[in-house]
Image (cartoon, rainbow, N blue to C red; front, side, top):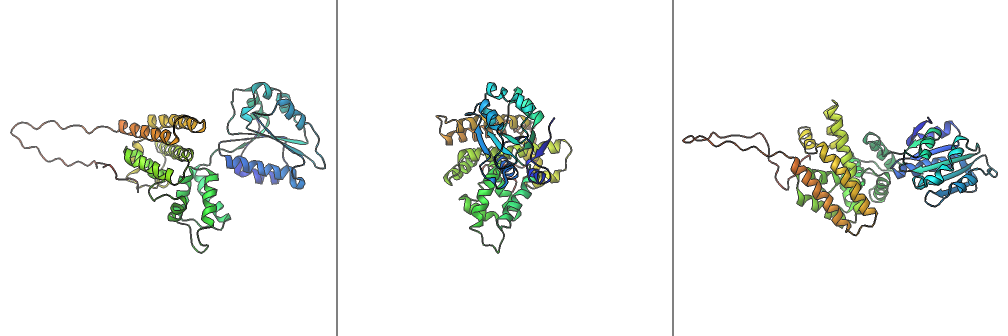
Length: 369
């Protein structure tokens, strides 16, 4: 089995050891995939530029073309770099022509395959996993994302308040390209003598406070359909793409799932409080509104909506998002137990006054802030 390497460690690894003949850059975070490729290009090509570099796309290239190019000798350099993007789109027939090469790659060529995800059932995918150095470009966990945002802000000369850092992650759905775009806008807006605040992020996003993906999740937890649709409308009016909103919501749901698993396995509640930025007294009741069935159904909803938004569905994007959000509210409402009715008091007796310790969540109120 070939070694696996987190994408954030690739650059330092290449400084310690020369590039190898085979790499698989895989994972859903496109910024990390692009950064890994940039690191490999720099290590392999150096100052030679594009002279010994060839790029193929899986849905256009044939296996024979890739083999021919990978077998050529470098010109005025030690190595060649061959990159195959969207490798998941290589047909089974074309990919199988590469199997023998994977066993004995050309020593003066670095062949790189890039893909968000490969079909592990294919012989090509299995052989590549065994022979190539795998660069893991999965989305960063929250513990990794927070320092990444801080470092990228420092690169632009920005200092972030904690709430600004958290809000940047929320509005971008954890997308590193999304975070970087927001940071670049903030760098031209915020004076260098002060820190970036959450209000700055709101202003440049064109959204009102209380309309982030975190607030959207709170409204879903309450089953507050009106608030949910209002937040969606405000984001769409601000120019936010429906696909980006969906990505942010899916990211937030993954966080909820991870926090629930953390608490179920005996993890500390303080970590859940920091992750969700909620009153410690409200964390468990908030998470209780998102049953495992709810979370699983939500992921299926997100996948279906993603296909409709990307596939040019005849449905209007706004309607697609509204249906998703209203369905999520239904999941919460159906999962909320009804308040049991008290039996009628016996005739001739005045019923005692009952004081409930359960707070009623009224429509329009928000929890967790």
